[in-house]
Amino acid sequence: MVKIGVSVPNTNTTSYNLIQKAIFDQLAEHNLTAQSDRIEIIWNSVQDQANGKNAVAMEFQQVKTMLNQGIKVLVLNSIDSRSAHSILRETKRKSVPVLTLDEPIRNDQIVGHFSINQSRLGEIAAAYVVQKLKDESLVDKSNVLVLEGPLGSPVFRQLKIGIYRILDQYPQVHILSKYSKADKSSGRQLASQTLRDYAQNVQAIICVNSGLAVGAVEGVNLYDMAEKIVTIGIGAERSAINLIVAGQHDAEVDLQSYERGQMILQSAIDIYNDQPFQADQEKTQFAPSRIITTSNYTILEKIWPDLHSKKIRK
Image 1: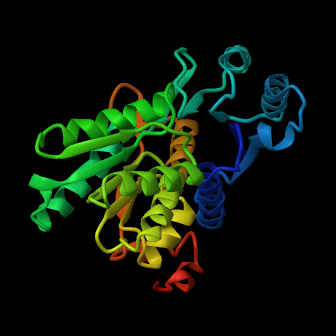
Image 2: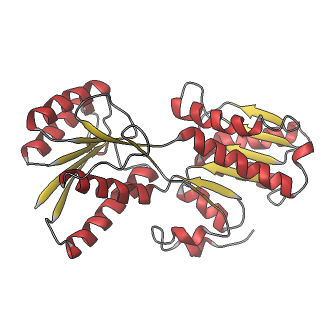
Image 3: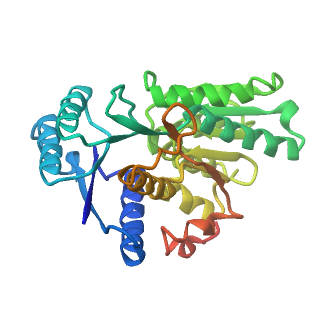
């Protein structure tokens, strides 16, 4: 039995929850059909267990326990850079290769990194909106509201770079940008406020995450304008997908977290078998992405089998 360790901050987010589900689904399939060694996953999500304790120290101790249990590969997204370097000293001492997830670490022990091209996700969202406006011959006379989330977030900053890289190609588009918390209530407030201030003359809303998108849709629905305003979020959280299924929300950019989980497990197995890490560039493999709309949401029924039950029109 070959042991592979996975240590992430938590499984409370849709992304890590789906990564975990995919890894264990894929693991079961692998072990049923394996022609070689069977695999065991040792999973650690430290913030799920910390309960006010020192999460940094707990993470280090739990990963150290994994190493003592004989893991052959470690997949790591550390909650703290200090903890990460302490962990890497231990993996080096045990000669265990490390794959990092989302948060990059510069170290010789790192054999590969799983990343998300955030600016590309922003480009996809903005390009979708521009095409929808073109289809309706509105691109020359449109107001587009961009809900940017809070200042200071590196992830949201990269998403915004991608969004504006596309929108700036269309100077005739009037951009209305708003900073806020990245949650539903902020999305609802800003969308409804902007519709009021601009006499409902808004043609599209781009949100940097699904929470803002869900709130924006609620704000749009206050004015009964779901059919007139294009809405898109980034993240494809279940709550936002439910609105797509119900016909109230146009689209979400999906990070394909389930597919990422499958890729992570396969890469860990490859590393154990002395196969090279399949990098897109410089030891980095980027997450796939796609647009989810009313025309293709059924592709998500593998991970959410009850999704079709949400198809309730306004």
